[in-house]
Image 1: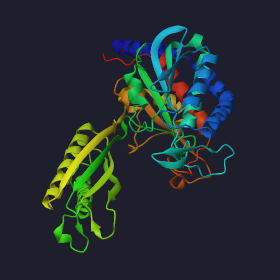
Image 2: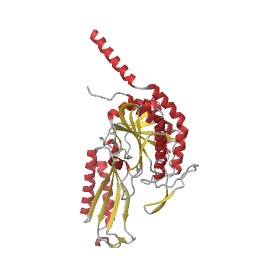
Image 3: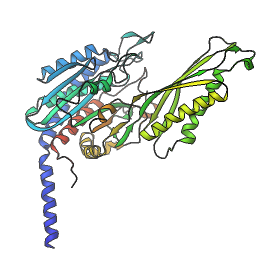
Length: 439
């Protein structure tokens, strides 16, 4: 009995010590400051929305971000990975180095709504005239992190460790022939000097109810690979197809064959996977069988081993189907983005922080998402947690809400307060809570 009571006492003391290392007063204070800064965060978001800039061209955005960070007394570096901005805030006490990331780029999309701050920007992209729009919520991400930076800077003496604010360009992918995005940020040392211990990021989501936070440990968002298949046949008159080898028919057979890789050759009980052909080009005239056809598409996977197997099967399927018709196929696969992989221990540890930000019932574990995020490049180097913040207005059915990357994309600005509170809470929780250790 004495041994049992002694054990209980030790566990109680250990639990009390753990609680003592968390700073509830600071958490309550920063939550209140988040509410007070909400209007300013919305104002910033509207500015960025009205003045969007494409990947690797975020010049004005970066300038405004850098000026804000400098006004807070934060050490600032600019020009990282083309237009990236990094702010370094040193707390008053020793502790970990925590990175917080926001992406800054907009998309070549022409906005279609009646917002007073709707984008009127125009540009030429891939030879076509188009509008420029924050059709994915990156304007909100920048504004949220600017608000978080202001609140933490005003409490720097109570912070344990260092906060690294990463404002990243080109999450949507750099222009043709250029490097960019998180991969280039990592390559240029954004996770070093000082070395980052952990990184957090978020994404507003137009199809998730406002006020809700969605998360998942391990594979959260998919690896994104792009493929191109070139099919070489033999040109002939359309009235005499037997005199040629039709690369269009061969391409159609290849497209059907690619779908059997998923439906019949992939272990889908293990993880989901997708193969989509999104572009097909062939021919110049109705009555000419062309010599050449090309298709291109994307592959989405959540498991590296499955990813490699699917790559091999795509090559085998395309080459052998072409050979069976007397044609020739060339396959190239370009790995664009790794799996957005949330560290399991870190994710489980941060759930309570997310619940404190949004309420216990509003923090939901979800299935993997087949979208891709280059936040994954940071997670390949250090433990990271990436999560969704709901931005679907209360009077809109999430199932019918316009999706990201569309002219009608819309987000509820109330989501940004949830975002600010979530980033503050995970930062302070990690900063003050003891590290997970194995006995």
